Image (tube, rainbow, N blue to C red; front, side, top):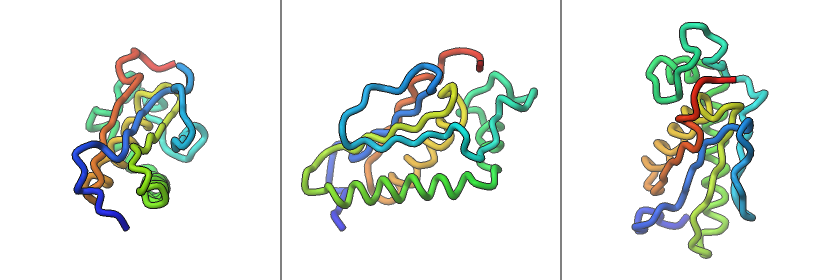
Length: 138
């Protein structure tokens, strides 16, 4: 396995987004993670959490408490790691697109969690939240 920690540039660029706003323009080789319909509790379904975003501590706790959250995070981390290992000689940045309906809650929480794990493994990872500030949910 390559030593990713030797690099000064990010190996992984995670973009969270909302499908309601359209899928970001993609290039060949990016990993697309669609959280719509995935068994993750949606904070917007809870009146006390509606309107908050994925950086809010209670929203993070709500999403992370979903039974399938850690399974989904492990899947994305594993897929990203496999793509990096397979293509390491090409020295490219892997683009990971993680989307939910609005791009404000579940995608943000999972995107940050995946980045935290990859960074802890020495794989420099950056996160961009494309629709975090787009206002209230649907």
